[in-house]
Each structure stands twice: as structure tokens, then as C-alpha cells.
Amino acid sequence: MCGRFTLRASPSVVAAQFGLFETPAWAPRFNIAPTQPVIAIRCLGTGGGRPEAVWLRWGLVPHWAEDPGIGNRLINARSETVAAKPAFRTALRRRRCLVVADGFYEWKKEGSVRQPYFIRFRDDRVFAFAALWDAWEGPEHTALESCTLLTTQPNALVGRIHDRMPVILPPEHHATWLDPALEDPRRLLPLLGPHPADEMEAYAVTRRVNNAQWDDPQCIQPA
Figure 1 (cartoon, helix red, strand yellow):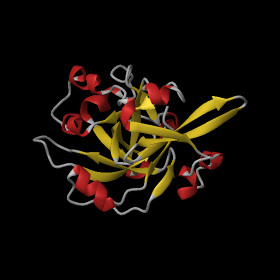
Figure 2: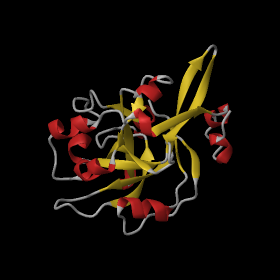
Figure 3: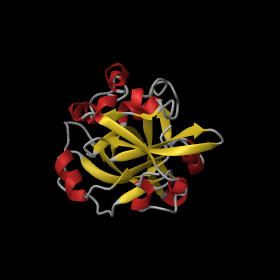
Figure 4: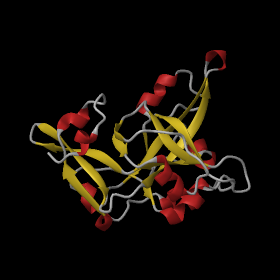
């Protein structure tokens, strides 16, 4: 699974990389955790509209859910089964997005402890997780837009740490993934493989990242 990630890049860097007119404002984030807001990019409507950047709550609440608490259990969706699961199959066809990041954490069991590792591209560039979103309406018309990150088999680097990794979509697949006119899972599922390991690096960090209240540069310092 993917349970924590970072977005240290500035809004202007993200806007330039993803071709956005504007983005919300944010400060550098070093320990983004489930239930928190994340920056996502999506296209609404048909005709290939321009991508927009929005805040979504991390942890998908399907539009049909009776209790929004279900989102706490739906922070990730397995790419191998996403087209069949009731919580995700409609979103796969109609509500796909990219969640912006520049690193993520995974935990490796080492003896009696779980050691966190920080994983990123060697050039520390911004990238995008493949994700799904949904809109839920609660009592008195309260609205909640939320998302889940897709996961896949790990590449050789991440596989030494964990048995899953988030799907990182390369830029050449962004337009296809965001295209609201594309609803055929057979066109989408082949995009959801592991990113090549040779462009990435991983190193152990302190267990400070285990506590979501800590969100500072010390979270990514080598152990």
C-alpha cells in the first residue's frame, strides 16, 4: 500500500509541469497522511477540457456510501481488481485523476520493527500517482470530494522494501488517464504497471514519519 507521501515542490513548479492555468496555494509538505487534503489534477466534462488542480480528501468515499467513514479504509485501490470492485469500478470509467507528489514512504519489517524508507526519483522531480475520485453528498447537502491511490506490483527497488507500490504515471500517459471521454477499462488497465526502478532511489529515514503530526524536513532526513 501507499500510506504517506510528500509534496515539497511549489505551486508554480507544479503548474508549469502539468500545464495548469492556476493552482491552490500550499506550503511544502513532508508527511501527507490519509484523511488529509491532497492536490489532484482532473478534467471535467467532455471535449478534452483543460486540467484543473483541486483539493481532494485522501480516502475515497463512494457516492453511494451511507457513512463517509468508509473512506478511512479506501486510501488505496489495487490495480489488478479495481475494474471489478463496487467502490472503484465507476470511478475508473468516469472519475480518474492524478495526485501530485515528489516522494513516498514505504515500511520494511526489520526484525521486530518496521523501518520507514523514503522513495523518490534520483533527480527529485515532481510526479503523479494514478488515482480515482468521487463526490459524496451527506446530510443537509454537505459535499465531500475524495480520492484513492492505485497500487501495483513493486519494481525491483521497492520490492526490497514492500510488496506493493503506488502507480506512478509517466507524463506521456497523463492525457489518456485524464480523458473523460475514455471509459474502456481495457484501454486504462495496461497503464497501471510499476515504474522502472533505474530512475528511482530509496533510503531509510527515522520513525518520525510514523506520526502524522510531524510534517517537516526532518521526516525525509536519512536515518
